[in-house]
Image (cartoon, one colour):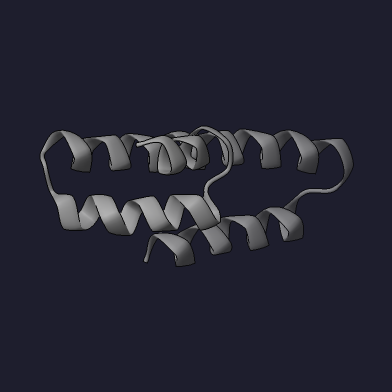
Length: 75
């Protein structure tokens, strides 16, 4: 479900904004998405939900942006 929400955000940004506005909002949303994924992953890790940690690790390795992708490889 998370993947669908992320794809919808990206799709609608392209439809709504152009030029510098698009670039600004794209960067801002990517940072928000990345931090949200990272926090959710670390929360699963903290609560020792190992099955969620494994699924999250694989997802972050494939779809993470920067910080979350690094966490997927390191943790």
